[in-house]
Length: 287
Image 1 (cartoon, rainbow, N blue to C red):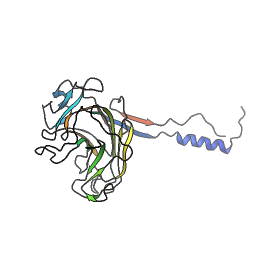
Image 2: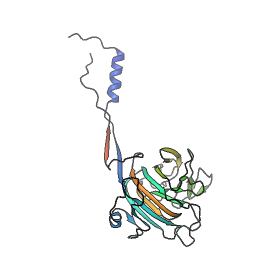
Image 3: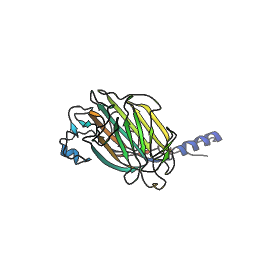
Image 4: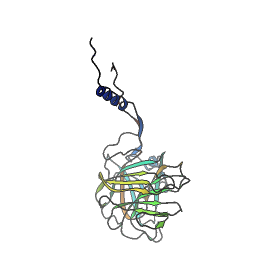
C-alpha cells in the first residue's frame, strides 16, 4: 500500500480535531420539578415546610386551575393579614434557575396598600418567589410591582449597605427594574416565568440577575451585590413562596429549580446530566 506525503495543513487539521475531541465534563442538574399534583394537604406538607400547617384555604394544592395536568398551588392573599409561606431546600449552588407557570385570578389587586394589621403594613404589590441563601444574609426575590404590573428583583443585603446601581444611593436593599422588555403580568392570564441568579464575588457588585416572561428576556443586570465579603462558602439553597401582599387568588404550577436554564414546556425528571464531547476519532495515522 502506498502512503503519500502528509502536508502541514493535514497535520494542523488533525490536531484541531483531536483537541476539540477531548472529552470535557460539566454538570447540568434539575434539582426538583413540582406540578403540585398532591392528593391531600398532608401529602403537600410532607414535601414543603409551611408556616400555616393544615390551612389549605391559605395555601395548598387545588384543582381550580392547572397548566398540567390537573392541579396547581393555590394561594389566598388578603393584604398580609393572613400571611403564609412555604419553603423547600435544594443543593447549594452559586447559580440557580427557576421556571414556573403563574397566574393571578381575575380581579387580583396589586395596587391597594397592605392591611395595617398585617405582615406588610404600608406596602403594596406582591412578592413572587425567593431564592434564599440559608446561613447567609442575601435572600433575593422577584416582586410583582403595582401600577405597571411588571416583575422586578429585590436584593436585600442583610444589614450592610451597598451602592445601588439603579438609584445611585447607598442602601440595605437594592431594586432592579425591567430593563430589556416590558411585559405586564395581567390577572386572568397564565405566564411562564423564568429567573436566573448568579452569586457575586463576595464583597463585589458583580452578581447576575435575569428574568424571562414567556421566553422574552425582560430584566438583566450583571452588577448586583449579594454575598458579603465573608460569605465566600455560601450559595443559594432554598426556595420560598409567599401568600402575603396583594388581594385575591394566585396559582403556581410546574415549578422547577436547577443550575441550568430549564425553559418553558415539559421538564425532564430531576437528574444529573453529564455533557461529554465526542471522543477523538481513532484509526488516524501520521506518516
